[in-house]
Length: 216
Image (cartoon, rainbow, N blue to C red):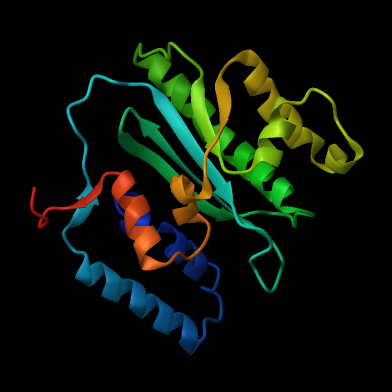
């Protein structure tokens, strides 16, 4: 299933959750894996669509839940990166440490995605494709955006100072521009938590994840 996530971002979160139980899995985990396979069978024609597009501006979406793991109380980070209208990179991963607040978990997710943005911009420069503007970096957490753009460290953010420096340096250098987006339009939501079918289908359609069997 991990191999399938290379071209199927819609199952990334589910597979990430299943991978956490590869040691001593239970019958419930096997049942969950079967449900993912059943979903894949029902959406066998679904795939990423890449259009002929001259727009090569990068943009990223980053999100996190808060303490969703009932065993460790750790949060899950998720991000997706676009080159023009095309989805080119995505990931879902449990955070290594517990967060004291939703803002902290969102900020850790921002730092997690920042590494991918830096790598992507450097790769594009190797291909002589330079970004004329700062990479648009979307988050639905106003608190996390405030931390990223505030030059003053507070007592409440002291324990995440390293993450603060990394993201803030990229903001100051002009590599990224943090922007707010509503939760309903946050594409990275797909990589952090289970969603209702209507919202799930809406978000993956915005990723240009389309079925070859759908009418054009």
